[in-house]
Structures are given as structure tokens and as C-alpha cells.
Image 1 (cartoon, rainbow, N blue to C red):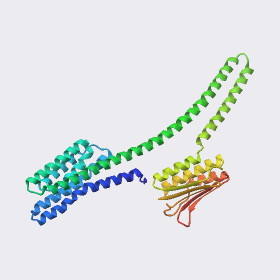
Image 2: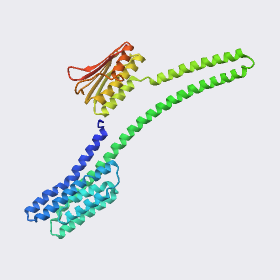
Image 3: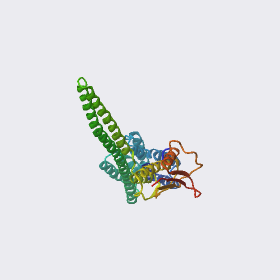
Image 4: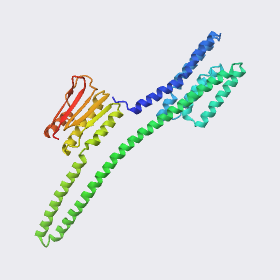
Length: 362
């Protein structure tokens, strides 16, 4: 099951808080109760309660559709608008602010302001003609309309900002990968291009001198062989350099990834005295350990320390018994560390944490 990201959690927060805004129409049930006590016929109260319930159910859909980026739910808006008008006809204005909030994501801001003002004015004029206390009603309806419509627009604005920030972060990550691939491709192109040109030139010279001087042609071919071997060594060197992992950069990256997954990460690393081989090996262990934290634990805290070539990576996400390590995971990595003269251990601790410890020659 995929772990919920910060963007997922923010979306849930926005959706549920918007549900709270829309459910202000529930005050209408208390209004109906009071009206029943004042002598309003029971069939009228029951009919209004059923309509209000249908409104409450339907009104929670539009903002979810807006957050998903869907098209305007015209049918839902029309049905809820009709229900709101019917309830307003019997003096219940509680559905009107919620309907305006449901409409807000799908019309221009100027339009929703005009419609809100007209709805307040029309309802209070209607109630004034019925002999109601318009002043108090006007204040309450205006306040609810501002809270409902303003809250809806604010939540949608917050969602757009969060989504754009998330997409921007992903775009930066993809750009960094693309730049690294371009650099690698440029290095290989420069290296192989020059080597292949030299090999082609030598081969052409050999073909020219072969009819007249077989010895000279053989020398040229020996030179081609040497060029090919040298090119192979250079390509291997470039690839090895490309595969090498910078430990400090990886630690910063792992910390950022864990923090993004709501795992508080503390890093204390002394890496200045480590050899390039030790740095690359420990970086590989850190990367595998971070992957295990994200995929196989429910950690809330993770601590990474490196001192004198000893890496300790612990987390508090241990749940259930620990099985054998996968051959392509920690088990294979342990063999690689032992081949380099080090040790790697991974097991639960008596304190209930999971500890990954690797020691390599510094």
C-alpha cells in the first residue's frame, strides 16, 4: 500500500475542512425543530428535513470534483439550487450560503460576488414582505455567505498553491536527472567520438598501405588495437565515475526524502577522512537503509550517524518479526561490504528500534 504523501494529507485536510463549511446548512435542522414547536405542520417540517438532507449529501460533491480538476457538475448544482430555493420559500436560508460555496469553484470570482449579493438581497426582501425581522436575518445570512464562499475560495487557492509547489519539486528532480544524463552523454560522446575518429583514421591508413607494405599495415592495425584498448579503459573510467555516489549529497537527499514522508531524520556524519571507496560503499548502505525505512516500516524518527568509517542507521518503525534479508537487498550488500573488508549487521535492538550498522575501512 502506498504511503500517503504530504500532498495527500493536505488534500484530505482541505476536503474535510470544506465539508465543515458546507455542513453549516445543518443548522437548518434546529431551525425546523423550532418551527415545529411554533406550530408549523409536521408534513412541512418532514418534507423540508428530507430536502435538507438531500442537499447536504449532494453539496459535498462539487468541491471534491473541483480539487480533482473535473468539469463543472451542472446537474448537482442545478438540483441543489432548486432545493435551496424551495427551502428559502418556507423561510429557511441555511442552504443558500452552502450552495453559493458549491458554485464558487466553477464561475468567475466577480460572478459569485454578484450572485451572493443578489441572493442576500432577494431573500431578505422576500422575508421582509412576510413580516420577518430583516436586520438580524441580514446579518446572519451575510456572515454565513462570506464565511462559506470565502472559505471555499481560500481552500481551493491553498490547494492550487500546494499542488504547484509539489509539481515544481518533481520538475526540479526530473530536471536534475536529465542534466546528469546529458552530462554523461556529453562525456561519452566526446570520449568515444575522438577515439573512433582515431581508429577510423588508422584503419584507413592500413587499408591504403596494405597492397604495398604489409608490415606497415600490420603496425597500423596494432596501433588500432592499442587505441581500442585505451578507449575501453577510458569508457570504464567514465562509467565508474558516473556510478560513484557522493556521500554528503546522498545524506542530504535521504534526509529530505524521509522528512517529506513525515519521518523526522537526524544526521550526524563525519565524512572528511573517509576514502572514496569507503564513501561510495557507505552511501550505498545509506540508500538501501532509507529504502527499507520507507517501504518496510512505520517509522516516525530516523537517526543516521557516521564516525570513523562506522555507519549506524536506526529507526523506530519496527513492526512484527523481522524476516531474512533479501539477496538483492541487505544480504547482497552485506557480501559487498565484507568483500571490502568491512561488516554489516541489521537487526532489532532491545529498545524496540531497528538498527543498521556498517563498518568499513576508513
